[in-house]
Length: 123
Image (cartoon, rainbow, N blue to C red):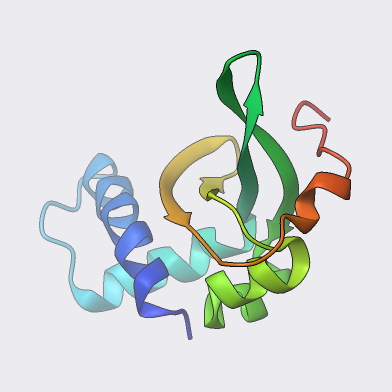
């Protein structure tokens, strides 16, 4: 089971995949089968906006594989706030190296992320 907010981000990608494979009007079953096929290769990369040189940049904090996303998917703002505190966060979904979609979150609280090391997104 996947959270409805996340399904809304993934479903268009699944439909495009099927269309690219010649399935013009995929059934619900075909979409769910495509989800089961690709989900193990999904990751969520989470970053926070931080001031930098008079502008902002993203400090990437964590990359979650699909098998470790359950608590995040259940309550994304609560999970982010509990791990990293408050701020303006961005979550990018990827299937392998393919960008799928993005969503922003703004949990309240102290910016605990300032003490967190940045993720090496090129590793």
